[in-house]
Length: 323
Image 1 (cartoon, rainbow, N blue to C red):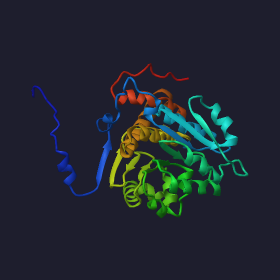
Image 2 (image 1 turned 60 degrees about the vertical axis):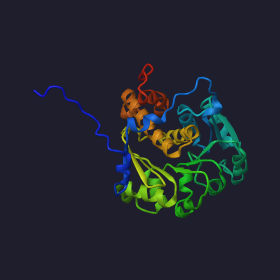
Image 3 (image 1 turned 45 degrees about the vertical axis):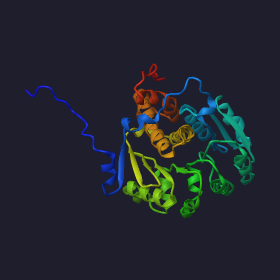
């Protein structure tokens, strides 16, 4: 009989860990991200939590814009505006009442036109997210490149915005000033690198670390055990999430979440880590109710608030019932 058994943290000083040679790899766990969620002041208002502008959507892909906006709202953004081609505004507006819209000039096919850059740059946003459902047209790619060059606030780039740099990833290293976050899935990252997707999947950690460091961007490489890589060479591996999140729109929700936390924390690395962890945790909560097969992106967005409550050890609201 051993008697009482006590498990204690041996308390290795952070300075000792930092002095160890080799790459920095850390797991995203509740203790490592919990402190990023701060209690809100009772006299706070929406202006305290950032205005996120989401440049997204095109004919047939308005849902991507709405999902990114809902992901931002459910992640605490004070205000969210979706900038989308004028013809898409009625559809996007009808998908949720909580976000605002900004009508952008269209090209001949109803997608975003290059001259939309003026309205976007004139908009008073704290963070801009660009890419979900934007389309892979020449005007859309030109808009993304112009926004990357001229945007003065943190920029979160996803989906079609990332593909706009395929074959010219070196241009990403030229940006100065506000920080950039890329959120590719493996296929988009492979296109950016000009490598087979099989090679990317076999070398996820090393490629993500090297790209983020050499291009001075924050990189979120989505997939099983999503990776967050920083310009300083640090990498973080997420421990939440499940296979049910392999569903259309899940990445759009994450894009909105990253932008929302960037507008609140004013810490890009912390925002990436927290958004990725909570997005995966929301997926785990959705899987418990819906199962992996029946889960959709909206289920993940709907549980982002519950994910925060779970992370901060506050009592969850009444669990969602399956429908």
